[in-house]
Image (tube, rainbow, N blue to C red; front, side, top):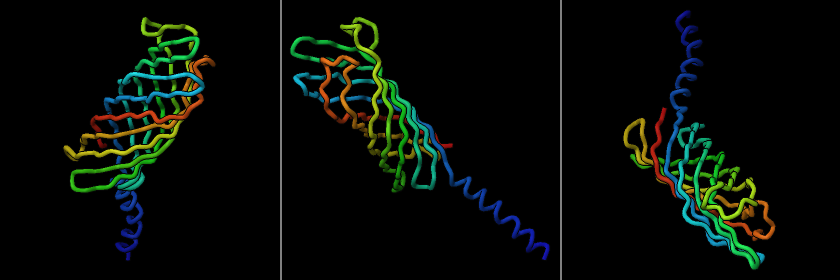
Length: 198
């Protein structure tokens, strides 16, 4: 009877240990590119070159196939505005903080995944020769994040992660009304990097 009672008391602890072993986390570092399409509105044209930067991500597994993800990105790019009576170029830094729900699927060593969430973005003009005017101000934007990719298992602890992410947001004007296109667009962000599971 004592043995049975002892085993009965151990069951909740064994269940907790089993859950803890299933609950995995990972952190990843990726190189990321940022592409913004040409946007035209209110007689203003906004163009940009390819941005380049780094994406840091952390995932907490809720179940073996679903996770919550937090991201931080830092990139730099150039944006150019052409309006009827004025033009401007901004060399800027882009910072992103985002959260997303990630659903993954397992096929041998390949783990495709899809994600969706929300992002806060900060566009900050850099005061250098790439910026043609000092009138622009730091601008915040909110966006919807979506994307997908595939993780290839290199070892039980390491994955190679290739992904496509995109953010839907309203065009920014750095606080200068003459550059306001008043348009929504999709900013595309392919990324490749390594994830470490722990």
